[in-house]
Length: 252
Image 1 (cartoon, rainbow, N blue to C red):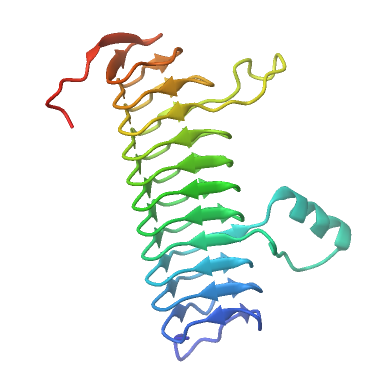
Image 2: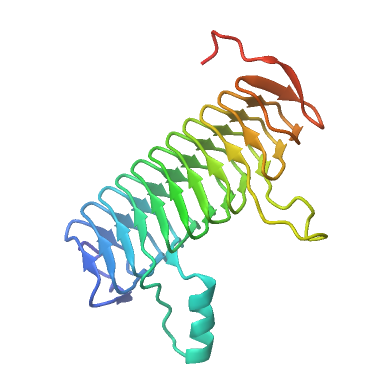
C-alpha cells in the first residue's frame, strides 16, 4: 500500500485487505472486510465500510463514503452505544476502472459493474445494481431498489426513485425525474417506479409518473410530463405528454 511519506494512515482495520500497489490517503478510514485491489486510488477523507470490494484501476475521490450502512444498522449503533459503524453482511462492489468523484455516497448492497463513473455528490442507495460504462451525473439521486443497465447516461440532477428499472443505452437529460407515488401520501398506494426500456431518451426537466412504461426507442421532449405508457419509438412532447410522431428510421 502506497502512502505519502510524511503522513500516517488514520485508521485501517486489521482485517482489511489492501493491495501494495494501491494508494490510500492518510485521512481515510477503511473498515473491516474491505478488499482493495491493485492500482486503486483512495483520496482525502474517504470512508469505506466493510463489507466492500474496490476492484483494480478505480479512483475514489475526496470525502466519498462507500458502503454506507442502512437504517437498521444505524439504529443498532444508537442502542449499542458503539463508536464504530460497520456494514457487514451487505456487500458493496465497485467494479474495475470506475471513477467515483468527490462527495459521492454509495450505500451497502450496491453493485457497480466496470467502467462506471459518477459526478460529484451523487447518492446511490441500497439494493441497486448498475451496469457497465454507465455515467451518473453530479447531484443525481438513485433512491434504492433500482436496476440500471449498461451504457446509460444519467445527466446532472436526475432523480430515480425506489422500484425503478432502466434498460441499456438510455439517456436521461439534466434534472429529469422519475416518480413512484401516485397520490403523494394522500392515499394508500404501493410504490411503483417507472420502467424505462433500452434506447429511450428523456429530455431535460421531463417528469415520468409512477408505474409508467417507456417502450424501446421512446423519446420524451424537454419538460414533458408522461402520464401514460408509450409504444415503441414514440416521440412525446407537452404536459400532459402527447405523441408527436414516430422516431425516424435513420435515427440511432
